[in-house]
Image (cartoon, rainbow, N blue to C red; front, side, top):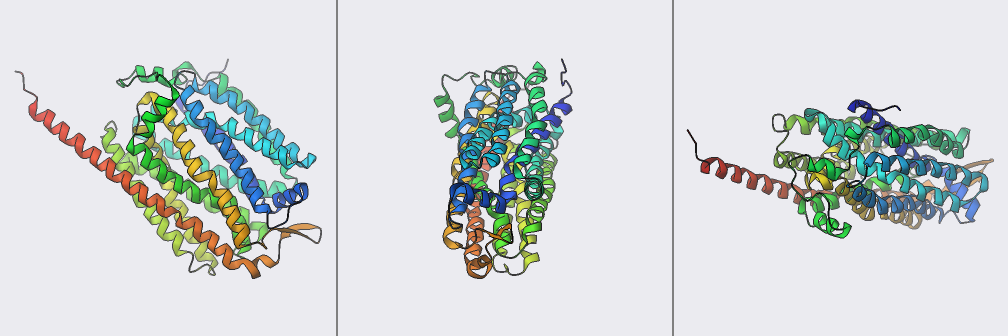
Length: 474
């Protein structure tokens, strides 16, 4: 049987899978007009209410995803992580088929079921991948590799926007899901059965082979959860990331619709341009964040306190910059190039923090609990960020811009012509709300940085005391 013994080949596999997962997430926001029309036709709802149902689709995925990612992170302590991920990816393939069938059956509820199952299928993979990279990547490049893995988010999202838009306009969005199912099926098999034991041991076993003396098998999931949450660096950084996720998830769900409604971009090119902005920001920002961390840690790669200090400092500086540039776009909302430029800069700065945040979480706990910590952090950031964001912004968009649903004109689904003339101010306020929420990211990242700095100072004092108190034996 084929076995991937080269760590680079395993990294290529997890990166490709990650791209496909994010492509699937972006299909719905990439074709807002077509999905709005589908919902209005299948449920008989008005254009003023359709945004709420778009939000329900996104939120249902997030609910299933964040509920189970902690469970699979916990199971990875005692089970082969890639076997768990591969089995769940087979469920993801089934979910894509259900989403495609929803169009031919004109069933919103089948589409909803498919999105829920997709969340289940993706959860195990996202819980185990970061721990694998940090454990097996070359020591001097591990944060760089983490940044490259983070590029998959932006690349997949951008491809998904364009892919969803083009497929919906020319072939049908159901085939967009079918194609993803066909491509993912063999990758799921490789993930489940072709990863050698060298890279596929339970995390508790990996921890027992190192100098990590923290008990590798917890008595219960509740005790493990409590011991992780009570770690200040873990909790503060996670809450800050959740605020970041709220803003980004809201923009991912409604960004194209807002840009179309404000007249900044037209329907034909909006998803492609928005996707290009996201992918360029991510492709530049994510690896840069990893490179900056590795560069500042040269010669000190194994000093956890120093790495923690470096990543939290970078997270804080980038978050402040992102908040400033995003809010600066509101007063110039009528200057389209300025809005798009500032959106790009803000996203670029946020993507720089992707791999530093992951490293921050991994360093907050013992090696045995790293998969669980990633899962729990993801659960919390989705509960506090991704989960409510589409519902809140969908509700606000419906209240502040009630004329921005879809309508049928000249045998074609299109945006309500009254949107720009009647609801421009409301759409601007939706943008402002999403951007201003980043202020919470700055607050909690500042606390995280102060905690990491205090930890570094404490470790430095202990080292000095040890050096001065150790007798020299001749």
